[in-house]
Amino acid sequence: MAHVELSISEAFVSPATSSLDQESEGFADADRRIDPDGFARWSDTVSTAAEPCLLIDRSTTIAAVSSSCCHLLGLGTPLDAIGRALLDSELRLLDFTAARGELTEQDVEKIPPLLALASGRLARGLLRVRCGAEGSDTTFDAITTPILAHGAVAGSLTFFAEV
Image (cartoon, rainbow, N blue to C red):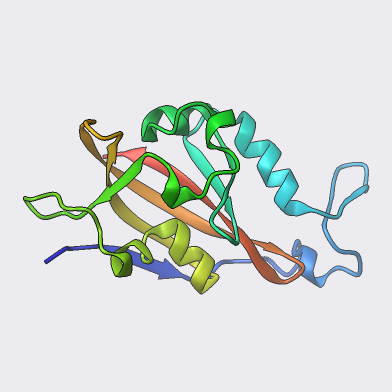
């Protein structure tokens, strides 16, 4: 039987800084200009990040990915990965059994990037990943937060660390 270890918790939004409580929508920058699309702002940040991170939209399409994340997960280049469905990539999610079988559809729904989309909460878990058909497998700690736009979950942002 597969063993998947997960945790979820409430996302913390400070009332003093929440864009959802402001009269205008979006995020104000230092010059008080309003960016109506916080998801696009995260996309720009992820695309230039040194850390291995991944941004997917509500339909689980890769919206942005850092170069280090592409290298870590075997996704090719960021240009190759962007626009592809997360689960249609070369990424193979494995269970934690000795046989290292692929995760069932039920278990795949519980991986942190997808769990944060479904629950609207922070999610964290270990992932065992095989990159490519003959690649070696690696275990990652994945920490994911839902990305909100206009009060609804628009996507999720995941940071990875090799264990």
